[in-house]
Image (cartoon, rainbow, N blue to C red; front, side, top):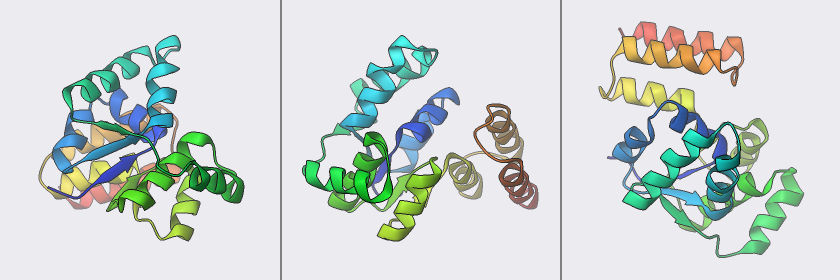
Length: 173
């Protein structure tokens, strides 16, 4: 099992759509969700087309598989918002990762990934999580391919990134 991970809203939504929140909780000792991300995904999500995803996230929190945590330093969050031009959820995700000394951050937002690089925070995307599961033997190549194709159909990632990920899956068959 891997260390602590802090998850941003875009990654959380994609993992909920895949119905992979359990896989995430099974791979990491603790899965933290900043309070702003929980509000964005569950509070706001229940009133949108992401209703089902919101319910899945809420259920996993109630079960204790995902832990909602408030950032101790709102000033750090504000500084990240101003410095990198990030939204509240992304800023809280990075602030919580820094203060909790998370081993990794799950991000699927380009600006947040650039900020994580500057801050020296290791991160994964949903695509790299698929590869992580494949390489650790938790899923097989056909499931990885099917999952990457679902992510491609949802239009979140560039065609080039999808192709590179599918090549990695193929190399692991």
